[in-house]
Amino acid sequence: MDTFYVITNYQKDPEFQTAGMIRDYLEQKGKRCYVQQCGKTQPSGQYKYTDARKIPKDVECVLVLGGDGTLLQAARDLVDCSLPLFGINMGTLGFLAEIEHTNIRPALDKLVNDEFQVEPRMMLKGKAYHQGRQLLNDIALNDIVIKRNGKLRVLDFNIYVDGVFLTAYSADGVILSTPTGSTGYNLSAGGPIVAPQASLILLSAVAPHTLSARSIVLPDNVEITIEVSARNDPDMDGADATFDGDTSVKLTSGDRIVISKSERRVPLIKVRNTSFLEILRQKMGN
Image 1 (tube, rainbow, N blue to C red):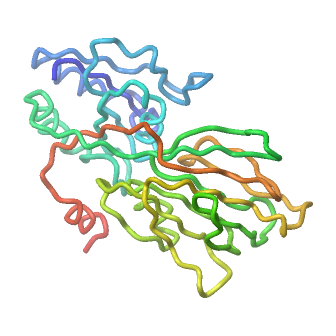
Image 2: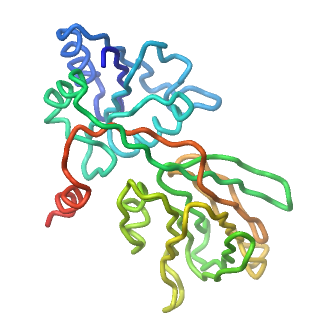
């Protein structure tokens, strides 16, 4: 690779010191490196953090400095660019970022020498409806979460797969997760951990008000409908459907969200030969 683009989380690299070091190091090796200078001003419109239209055409790789949240934002903004992303963790516990900030230079050497692999990650797409009218159409790399808001009330959810009723949950919420997102909120809710290379959809309830609720693993070719049951009080505060903890839409009794595998995929760069199981053991501190 010869041309790079750096996206940095200004809260974790406020003076762009790490981003500047990366640029200088790559330029010393005869490579070209651009640094996003958006500061605290977020682009408006379809982009949440990075304006894909401002990335030069010759860029071959995007380096993302921050944590998992920064990488999720970059993945959503750049999903139509097909540029591989390389995560550098500047935060605490992170599963998406490939390396820690203390190992930047050796990792850059591997990128420059083309000693890496690109691992495509599946995404989810979801459409939210109110009385047949579409409210939101968005994508997620980690998860789509439908969760109560307002007062501390348990909500009733009806779950359908390919139009056939599967089960009902009485819970604080429901998580639809990709394998990549299995180590996120899904993990906190007691859902299974899945190797990120897999292609399937995880369904987990958040704080279910029943002893029989279990996470469900579904194939990637199904369409899942989550309905906020009409049994809920119509005057309740309702629920929020959130995509990767970012964009969201409010849902009330009878509303539904239809979720399936997206045609888009996020290419993540891997420079280490460490297996997912080894990474999991390290992150879990065992």
